[in-house]
View 1: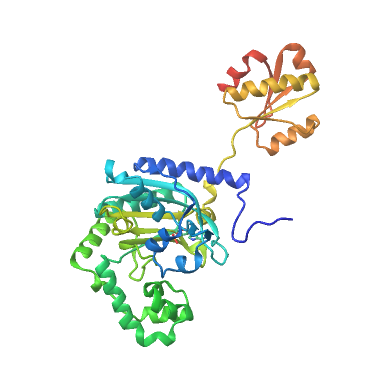
View 2: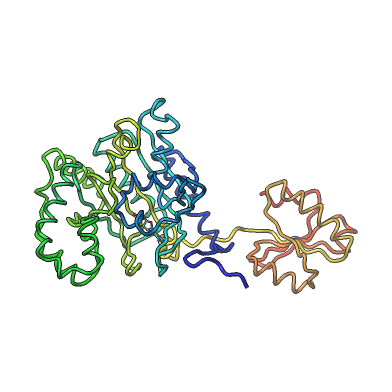
Length: 412
Ligand code: AMP
């Protein structure tokens, strides 16, 4: 038997209903905030991610699915932001309207060690707002993430926020960490020893007990932030307060990617265990320019769909569609049924028929399993009289209806 690749999942029809629902809700909310859908390729030149996420990040170092073709090196996209910024620049979108808002759905690929909530192919629902430095945009984006979670009926999540400041402030923070951690290197885990040289900010994300102890003793405050950065962050917090959005300022929240500056945020859920992030995002004010575009401040986030589905509450369970089930008895009725099915579907009535030659009892059971609200029965008697029998599966009541009057009856 052939098996799926480790860290990938089949989304079977029953679960696909939840995905459809999540997408439908998201489209609705994104549209209310005036975000427009963008679809970029799953495959990009690998250098796009090396340049944007950063050569020393874990994604670029260890997690990219790379494909070599002659001299070209491609990568399956590990995230959406870099591709969207590339598309914004390459399609000259800034020339018609510099300020743009995008949303997206789709699979992302990371060569990680699979575990609960951590896959090699997973899906993001995300958005990017490009072309503004306004702190109110940070507030809007976080409010949008909050609205999505509420619309998905997710409860008990926590929004953590922090500011990395400008690129210069971030360098200051890195220097500060360097100074404070140098003498404590021996207490850090092997990964963090490597991070110390390659991506020191990432040490602040480490979950190792010893590292956590070292980190908690660092006593780093927000003194690395310049006045402007501090002002930006204050306005973000004031905006969130004005909207009564609950958040927690989390000093050591850094996000590991090179492109983040100023506001960063992460939304966590206690039921997720070790991989507790439902979604995350932040500002990336220098990325558009770095990738060859204009100066354009930007901010975005992405939720992991698989993790959203792990924490959805029972009342968010999709109701199965109210389908009508057609039972025919005998060949002549079956032919008549075929015509009827087409007519019903053309009239926007969702319906299914028995294709397994079941007995009447068996077919009624199948209708029940399908959660059909109504059943139509056509037998010899009905054919003779030019009627169909309509059975309400909830009340059990049934009545004969003239064939011509059926659509009207079903629609009212
Ligand atoms: P990131 O781009 O790493 O900030 O990811 C944003 C969100 O995507 C995370 O908060 C997770 O919900 C989800 N995510 C990231 N990596 C994975 C993965 N390997 N498997 C499943 N979900 C993931």
